[in-house]
Image (cartoon, rainbow, N blue to C red; front, top):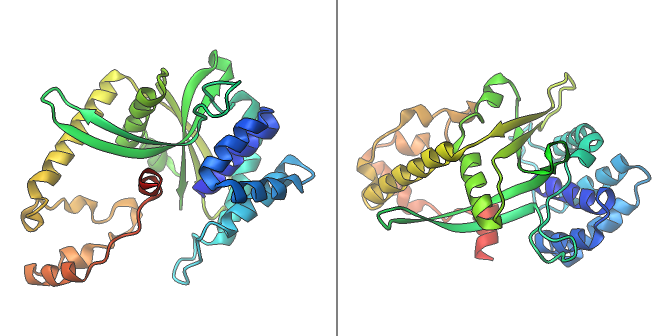
Length: 292
Protein backbone atom coordinates (compact mmCIF):
# COMPACT_ATOMS: atom_id res chain seq x y z
CA UNK A 1 0.00 0.00 0.00
CA UNK A 2 2.87 2.38 0.67
CA UNK A 3 4.10 1.70 -2.84
CA UNK A 4 0.67 2.75 -4.08
CA UNK A 5 0.71 5.94 -1.98
CA UNK A 6 4.09 6.81 -3.51
CA UNK A 7 2.81 6.03 -7.02
CA UNK A 8 -0.19 8.30 -6.55
CA UNK A 9 2.05 11.14 -5.38
CA UNK A 10 4.23 10.66 -8.45
CA UNK A 11 1.06 10.91 -10.56
CA UNK A 12 0.15 14.11 -8.69
CA UNK A 13 3.59 15.56 -9.33
CA UNK A 14 3.35 14.95 -13.08
CA UNK A 15 -0.32 15.48 -13.92
CA UNK A 16 -1.53 17.92 -11.27
CA UNK A 17 1.62 19.96 -10.61
CA UNK A 18 2.94 19.62 -14.19
CA UNK A 19 6.44 18.57 -13.12
CA UNK A 20 7.16 15.46 -15.25
CA UNK A 21 10.94 15.61 -14.79
CA UNK A 22 10.56 15.73 -11.02
CA UNK A 23 8.16 12.79 -11.18
CA UNK A 24 10.60 10.82 -13.34
CA UNK A 25 13.53 11.56 -11.04
CA UNK A 26 11.63 10.51 -7.91
CA UNK A 27 10.00 7.56 -9.72
CA UNK A 28 13.31 6.11 -10.85
CA UNK A 29 14.68 6.51 -7.32
CA UNK A 30 11.71 4.77 -5.69
CA UNK A 31 10.74 2.08 -8.22
CA UNK A 32 13.66 1.84 -10.60
CA UNK A 33 13.58 2.99 -14.21
CA UNK A 34 11.81 0.01 -15.79
CA UNK A 35 9.06 -0.33 -13.21
CA UNK A 36 8.35 3.39 -13.10
CA UNK A 37 8.28 3.71 -16.88
CA UNK A 38 5.80 0.83 -17.07
CA UNK A 39 3.73 2.37 -14.27
CA UNK A 40 3.55 5.62 -16.22
CA UNK A 41 2.37 3.81 -19.37
CA UNK A 42 -0.29 1.98 -17.38
CA UNK A 43 -1.57 5.25 -15.94
CA UNK A 44 -1.65 6.98 -19.32
CA UNK A 45 -4.21 4.42 -20.51
CA UNK A 46 -6.85 5.89 -18.19
CA UNK A 47 -9.30 8.44 -19.61
CA UNK A 48 -10.09 10.10 -16.28
CA UNK A 49 -7.94 10.94 -13.28
CA UNK A 50 -9.50 8.18 -11.20
CA UNK A 51 -9.03 5.68 -14.05
CA UNK A 52 -5.36 6.60 -14.30
CA UNK A 53 -4.85 6.06 -10.58
CA UNK A 54 -6.84 2.81 -10.73
CA UNK A 55 -4.63 1.39 -13.49
CA UNK A 56 -1.56 2.49 -11.56
CA UNK A 57 -2.82 0.95 -8.33
CA UNK A 58 -3.49 -2.39 -10.03
CA UNK A 59 -0.04 -2.49 -11.59
CA UNK A 60 1.83 -1.43 -8.45
CA UNK A 61 0.01 -3.85 -6.15
CA UNK A 62 0.30 -6.78 -8.55
CA UNK A 63 4.05 -6.21 -8.94
CA UNK A 64 4.74 -5.44 -5.27
CA UNK A 65 5.79 -8.99 -4.39
CA UNK A 66 2.88 -9.32 -1.95
CA UNK A 67 0.85 -12.52 -2.12
CA UNK A 68 -2.43 -13.30 -0.38
CA UNK A 69 -2.20 -15.38 2.78
CA UNK A 70 -5.00 -17.97 3.02
CA UNK A 71 -5.29 -17.22 6.75
CA UNK A 72 -5.56 -13.44 6.23
CA UNK A 73 -9.00 -12.38 5.05
CA UNK A 74 -8.56 -8.61 5.38
CA UNK A 75 -5.20 -7.73 3.87
CA UNK A 76 -5.81 -9.20 0.45
CA UNK A 77 -4.74 -7.69 -2.85
CA UNK A 78 -8.39 -7.30 -3.84
CA UNK A 79 -9.20 -5.37 -0.66
CA UNK A 80 -6.07 -3.26 -1.10
CA UNK A 81 -7.09 -2.27 -4.63
CA UNK A 82 -10.55 -1.31 -3.40
CA UNK A 83 -9.06 0.66 -0.49
CA UNK A 84 -6.68 2.41 -2.88
CA UNK A 85 -9.57 3.64 -4.97
CA UNK A 86 -11.52 4.89 -1.94
CA UNK A 87 -8.38 6.77 -0.89
CA UNK A 88 -7.99 8.27 -4.37
CA UNK A 89 -11.65 9.35 -4.59
CA UNK A 90 -11.34 11.09 -1.23
CA UNK A 91 -8.00 12.82 -1.89
CA UNK A 92 -8.04 13.79 -5.59
CA UNK A 93 -10.44 16.76 -5.19
CA UNK A 94 -8.04 18.41 -2.72
CA UNK A 95 -4.66 17.73 -4.35
CA UNK A 96 -4.24 21.28 -5.69
CA UNK A 97 -4.44 22.53 -2.10
CA UNK A 98 -1.72 20.09 -1.00
CA UNK A 99 1.07 20.04 -3.62
CA UNK A 100 4.12 17.85 -3.17
CA UNK A 101 7.06 19.75 -1.68
CA UNK A 102 10.28 19.93 -3.68
CA UNK A 103 13.58 21.67 -2.99
CA UNK A 104 14.23 23.17 -6.43
CA UNK A 105 11.79 23.65 -9.31
CA UNK A 106 14.63 23.88 -11.84
CA UNK A 107 16.59 20.88 -10.58
CA UNK A 108 14.63 17.60 -10.29
CA UNK A 109 17.65 15.90 -8.74
CA UNK A 110 17.22 17.89 -5.54
CA UNK A 111 15.06 16.39 -2.72
CA UNK A 112 11.41 15.73 -3.57
CA UNK A 113 8.83 15.01 -0.87
CA UNK A 114 7.97 11.42 -1.75
CA UNK A 115 9.37 8.41 0.11
CA UNK A 116 12.35 10.24 1.60
CA UNK A 117 14.57 7.78 3.45
CA UNK A 118 16.50 9.27 6.35
CA UNK A 119 19.49 7.80 8.16
CA UNK A 120 20.56 10.15 10.93
CA UNK A 121 22.57 10.11 14.14
CA UNK A 122 21.02 11.58 17.28
CA UNK A 123 23.75 12.93 19.54
CA UNK A 124 23.11 13.74 23.19
CA UNK A 125 24.84 16.25 25.43
CA UNK A 126 26.98 13.52 27.00
CA UNK A 127 28.22 12.38 23.58
CA UNK A 128 26.02 9.27 23.39
CA UNK A 129 24.90 8.57 19.83
CA UNK A 130 21.93 6.66 18.44
CA UNK A 131 21.41 5.78 14.78
CA UNK A 132 17.81 6.43 13.71
CA UNK A 133 16.37 5.45 10.33
CA UNK A 134 12.96 5.74 8.73
CA UNK A 135 11.00 6.89 5.70
CA UNK A 136 8.95 10.05 5.28
CA UNK A 137 5.94 8.99 3.20
CA UNK A 138 5.27 12.46 1.89
CA UNK A 139 6.06 16.12 2.40
CA UNK A 140 3.42 18.58 1.24
CA UNK A 141 2.82 22.32 1.24
CA UNK A 142 -0.39 23.89 2.50
CA UNK A 143 -1.48 26.50 -0.04
CA UNK A 144 -4.01 27.97 2.38
CA UNK A 145 -1.30 28.58 5.00
CA UNK A 146 1.35 30.39 2.93
CA UNK A 147 2.70 27.08 1.58
CA UNK A 148 3.49 25.82 5.06
CA UNK A 149 5.59 22.64 4.84
CA UNK A 150 3.58 19.72 6.19
CA UNK A 151 4.51 16.09 6.74
CA UNK A 152 2.21 13.38 5.37
CA UNK A 153 2.13 9.97 7.04
CA UNK A 154 0.09 7.15 5.49
CA UNK A 155 -1.44 4.48 7.70
CA UNK A 156 -3.54 1.43 6.94
CA UNK A 157 -5.89 -0.01 9.52
CA UNK A 158 -8.54 -2.65 10.03
CA UNK A 159 -10.71 0.02 11.62
CA UNK A 160 -10.51 3.77 11.94
CA UNK A 161 -12.29 4.84 15.10
CA UNK A 162 -11.80 7.53 17.73
CA UNK A 163 -9.24 5.43 19.62
CA UNK A 164 -7.18 5.08 16.43
CA UNK A 165 -7.39 8.81 15.70
CA UNK A 166 -6.48 9.89 19.24
CA UNK A 167 -3.41 7.62 19.22
CA UNK A 168 -1.56 10.12 17.02
CA UNK A 169 -1.92 13.06 19.39
CA UNK A 170 1.35 12.14 21.14
CA UNK A 171 2.82 9.31 19.06
CA UNK A 172 6.62 9.40 19.13
CA UNK A 173 6.95 8.00 15.60
CA UNK A 174 5.59 11.07 13.85
CA UNK A 175 7.40 13.39 16.27
CA UNK A 176 10.70 11.75 15.39
CA UNK A 177 9.92 11.89 11.69
CA UNK A 178 9.20 15.61 11.90
CA UNK A 179 12.46 16.22 13.79
CA UNK A 180 14.53 14.19 11.32
CA UNK A 181 12.77 15.71 8.31
CA UNK A 182 13.65 19.20 9.51
CA UNK A 183 17.27 18.25 10.13
CA UNK A 184 17.62 16.48 6.79
CA UNK A 185 15.91 19.03 4.56
CA UNK A 186 16.61 22.26 6.43
CA UNK A 187 12.96 23.33 6.55
CA UNK A 188 10.56 24.38 9.30
CA UNK A 189 8.06 21.55 9.53
CA UNK A 190 5.92 21.42 12.67
CA UNK A 191 2.62 20.34 11.13
CA UNK A 192 1.55 17.02 9.69
CA UNK A 193 -1.37 15.01 8.40
CA UNK A 194 -2.17 11.36 9.05
CA UNK A 195 -3.81 9.76 6.02
CA UNK A 196 -5.64 6.71 7.32
CA UNK A 197 -7.29 4.19 5.01
CA UNK A 198 -9.24 1.13 5.97
CA UNK A 199 -7.97 -1.90 4.07
CA UNK A 200 -11.39 -3.52 3.79
CA UNK A 201 -13.80 -0.67 3.02
CA UNK A 202 -17.25 -0.80 4.59
CA UNK A 203 -18.64 2.25 2.70
CA UNK A 204 -20.02 3.74 5.92
CA UNK A 205 -18.14 7.03 5.73
CA UNK A 206 -15.15 5.90 7.74
CA UNK A 207 -12.94 4.22 5.12
CA UNK A 208 -10.59 7.21 4.74
CA UNK A 209 -9.73 9.71 7.45
CA UNK A 210 -7.26 12.61 7.37
CA UNK A 211 -6.17 13.82 10.78
CA UNK A 212 -4.00 16.95 11.19
CA UNK A 213 -1.47 17.13 14.00
CA UNK A 214 1.13 19.53 15.29
CA UNK A 215 4.38 19.22 17.20
CA UNK A 216 6.66 21.70 18.99
CA UNK A 217 10.21 21.72 20.39
CA UNK A 218 8.98 20.38 23.74
CA UNK A 219 7.47 17.34 21.99
CA UNK A 220 10.76 16.75 20.17
CA UNK A 221 12.64 16.93 23.48
CA UNK A 222 10.31 14.31 24.99
CA UNK A 223 10.82 12.12 21.91
CA UNK A 224 14.60 12.43 22.26
CA UNK A 225 14.36 11.41 25.92
CA UNK A 226 12.19 8.42 24.97
CA UNK A 227 14.72 7.29 22.34
CA UNK A 228 17.51 7.49 24.89
CA UNK A 229 15.57 5.53 27.53
CA UNK A 230 14.69 2.76 25.09
CA UNK A 231 18.18 2.40 23.66
CA UNK A 232 19.73 2.43 27.14
CA UNK A 233 17.39 -0.39 28.11
CA UNK A 234 18.23 -2.33 24.97
CA UNK A 235 21.96 -1.95 25.52
CA UNK A 236 21.62 -2.99 29.15
CA UNK A 237 19.93 -6.28 28.30
CA UNK A 238 21.20 -6.92 24.78
CA UNK A 239 23.30 -9.89 25.93
CA UNK A 240 21.06 -10.81 28.87
CA UNK A 241 17.53 -10.55 27.46
CA UNK A 242 16.29 -13.32 29.76
CA UNK A 243 16.36 -10.90 32.72
CA UNK A 244 14.87 -7.89 30.96
CA UNK A 245 11.72 -6.27 32.30
CA UNK A 246 8.48 -7.78 30.97
CA UNK A 247 6.07 -5.19 29.65
CA UNK A 248 3.01 -7.38 29.45
CA UNK A 249 0.71 -4.51 28.47
CA UNK A 250 2.22 -4.86 24.99
CA UNK A 251 1.09 -8.49 24.57
CA UNK A 252 -2.19 -7.41 22.95
CA UNK A 253 -1.37 -4.16 21.18
CA UNK A 254 -2.98 -3.30 17.86
CA UNK A 255 -6.05 -5.33 18.84
CA UNK A 256 -4.38 -8.69 18.33
CA UNK A 257 -2.11 -10.97 20.39
CA UNK A 258 1.62 -10.59 19.85
CA UNK A 259 3.16 -13.34 17.71
CA UNK A 260 5.92 -13.79 20.32
CA UNK A 261 3.63 -14.81 23.19
CA UNK A 262 4.51 -18.54 22.73
CA UNK A 263 8.19 -17.57 22.99
CA UNK A 264 7.84 -15.34 26.05
CA UNK A 265 5.46 -17.71 27.86
CA UNK A 266 7.86 -20.64 27.48
CA UNK A 267 10.36 -21.72 30.12
CA UNK A 268 13.88 -20.32 30.22
CA UNK A 269 15.23 -23.49 28.65
CA UNK A 270 12.45 -23.52 26.08
CA UNK A 271 13.27 -19.96 25.05
CA UNK A 272 16.91 -20.89 24.57
CA UNK A 273 15.86 -23.74 22.29
CA UNK A 274 13.48 -21.50 20.34
CA UNK A 275 16.16 -18.81 20.06
CA UNK A 276 18.56 -21.28 18.46
CA UNK A 277 15.93 -22.06 15.79
CA UNK A 278 15.17 -18.44 14.83
CA UNK A 279 16.06 -17.15 11.39
CA UNK A 280 16.97 -13.64 10.29
CA UNK A 281 13.98 -11.44 9.60
CA UNK A 282 13.35 -9.78 6.26
CA UNK A 283 14.56 -6.17 6.50
CA UNK A 284 11.90 -3.47 6.68
CA UNK A 285 11.45 -1.10 3.69
CA UNK A 286 13.43 1.58 5.54
CA UNK A 287 16.23 -0.87 6.35
CA UNK A 288 16.36 -2.05 2.73
CA UNK A 289 16.51 1.52 1.47
CA UNK A 290 19.33 2.42 3.87
CA UNK A 291 21.29 -0.77 3.20
CA UNK A 292 20.84 -0.19 -0.56
